[in-house]
Amino acid sequence: MKKNSDGEARERIIKAAIQLFFQKGYDATRVNDIASTANVNKALIYYYFKSKEDILDFMVHSLLDNAVSITLDFIQTNVVQMIKDGYLDIKPDRLHFISDEAIKNFMQSAFKFYERVVDYVIENKEIIRILMLESLKSGKHQNSLFRFMKFMIGDEKNPIFKTISDVGHEFVYSDEMVLFKFFFSIIPIVSFAAYFDDYKAVSSLNDNELRSSFLHVYQIITTSLISGSDILLRNNSTKT
Image (cartoon, rainbow, N blue to C red):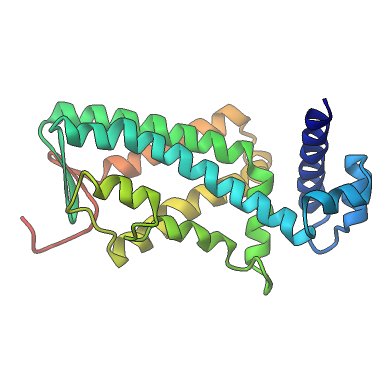
């Protein structure tokens, strides 16, 4: 029973920190404020976390770990399986499918994956907004957003790269691809989550309408990368 009680207290601390960091700002929030909002003793906070910074670090790591878990699930059940079944061949600059039907099935799965990601960032929009605000300051968490980049490098320590390269040996992360993924994939969805409530207020759209509109735009952009039976990963004007 005590174990469950401790877990509930820890969860209250995290939720209280998110609420206060979001409302007051990270710098303006004191550990005493978190203890009061979570209805716990200040000493209990230091039992779980070394400092206020440690609480924010925990939020960032949890956000990244869950995002990677969602991505790996998609890669294992779709990308890896299609490669093993002979429907997909990964080239250095493109994903090549054996047929239009194969690319159609992949895109349907990709849209469902992105929908899952969008729902995840909306659910965690407060944390993401805190992270974005901290990234604009000169401080310990200034480069927190760039932690996403460690999952876009060609390194065996990167579980996403390793999972794909184990079955698609030609798969590479070029500098151009990393830049594209960060500024045209990760940053847009992070910004969407951070400004979700603000945009909803000025646009008069409700939650479902705003979510649907964002997903529709994503489909348009992703579809533009399709060329025949390929999804282009890099523009190469010399390739025919």
